[in-house]
Amino acid sequence: MRFKEGLRYFVAFFLIFEFAFAGAWTRKAGNVLVVPYYYFYSAEKYYDLNWKKRAIDNGGYFEGQGFGIYFEYGFTDNLNFIGNVPFILNKWMDDYTYKDNYGFGDVEVGLKFKFYDSKVIFTLQTSIIVPVYSVDREPLLGYRQYAGEIRLLFSGGMRPFGLNSYFNIETGFRKFYSKVASQVRFQFLYGIYFNSLTQGLIQFDGVNSIGKGTFATRFNPSIETDYIEGKLSLSLAYRFTYKAWLQAGFFYDVYGKKIGVGRGFFIASWIEI
Image 1 (cartoon, rainbow, N blue to C red):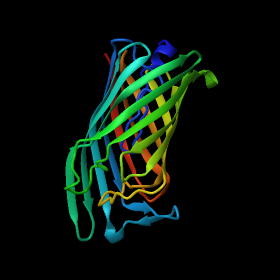
Image 2: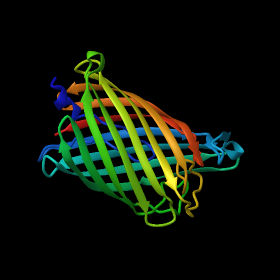
Image 3: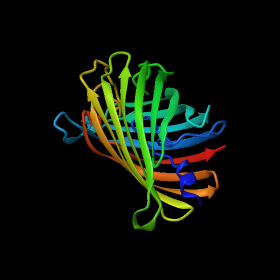
Image 4: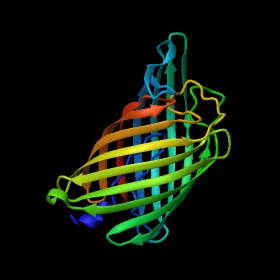
């Protein structure tokens, strides 16, 4: 396997109900990356204003599942069109209430531009978030707020201990149209190839809200109008054809403020056409 070629197929999982795939690498002109995915998320505790975990009132329990498709299309070798279309199933239960809701979530579309490619790669990504659901039914599927995001991505390869590996570092700013506080988002990922068919990934993702929001969240501790969250994920990926991988792993919130203590697992298959 050519290591530099193999790097173009790695996928980074990012659950705070968004996905960031493929790091700073871009598809070549005319190529398509398609990633079907599934995740399961649950929370029965909540980080309070003092960063401490506490049980959700009245024995509350939240469960979220998501199916979706992420894709990239290469307009040129350096400019890609990207998109993510999720379908969400949410469930809430406590001592007095049971609620469920399902539907398409926040659709994301944007552009990804690689402006530096040498021993490391720098890419600029811009996207818009379009809600395609209502807030008439609970648990809520999202904020139902339009938003825009800009993100800087920095990736590269290395060979510690004689093994091919890579890193991806991202930082971004998301601005909502109204009611929800703006967010600074970041990611640190390290992946290592154990052999030509198998790799392991460790990833840390964070969200820091700036200011206060006025959106009233109901029966869904995974979304808050202003919060702080840090999430760790570990996964393995197996290459079953030259251009197709299967990835599976788990995630857990390691710190937070005004947000559910989430944990769960995910599966994704990423295929380049």
